[in-house]
Length: 176
Image (cartoon, rainbow, N blue to C red; front, side):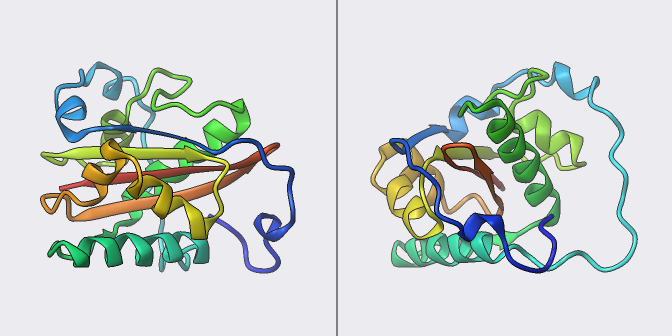
């Protein structure tokens, strides 16, 4: 989680071409769960949760506005999903690669299982090179990402951004 104070995310960075990738709900629903057994135990934090990241809140607001326009209920920001999204965004930024597969072979579903979440439906959008005020528009301009954002059966979301050497890495993971 980010610490209070100035964020390195607000500094100017060289930009590379922005890219997106998504996995639809149907694809994620059939993924094998074998790597979940190998996932390390997750420590349960004690005390109040940290405040949400302002960039993630902006993306949540824009995502929910798009959902409201088609009659979907707003997504709830869920801390276990935020933790899974943060892990994946941080890993992509460290690797300098945008992907749905973690270094350990994890998938969106297994990352959620590692956080103690076992939803019936999952979906994930990832992106690279977009600012917070651009990423939702980019996802909505892509059929697969748009389907994930506007799937009314999905009810919870985790959103995270991690700065990389050449731009921001975003993860938006959904559960329902």
